[in-house]
Image (tube, rainbow, N blue to C red):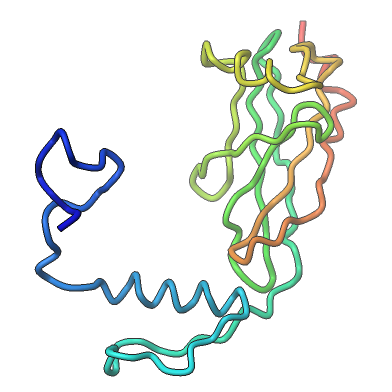
Length: 173
């Protein structure tokens, strides 16, 4: 039995503890059926599932979502906060990504109510994150090239949109 509760021999990456006495989770099984359908793989039968699993069709959504940059707040050298949003006609926006350097690197944003928020420069490790990339943002207002793009629930990536920040650097003293 591979799910042992013996620390020296246990797999540290295994999340199971002992045997699953409840049996397989139908929600996980249905998610697998849906995922395979999106990849074009369809089962001939859904054995041992009874009426619990439903055969799925692959997604027909091939259109990427649109992104909008709502605001860019340059708080000082190396510190910026960006609010963005996305819209998808055939599905749900799963994430909005932000670039500070014209699309060379992309950062995930966090859901913030009805929009998405990304802040850079308020954590000590932000500079370390970008130091591995060839074209990091230099931290200056004039070097800031903000783009946003949205990704939907079918993994379609929308076109990147740029922030028109002509007056952004004029307001920073």
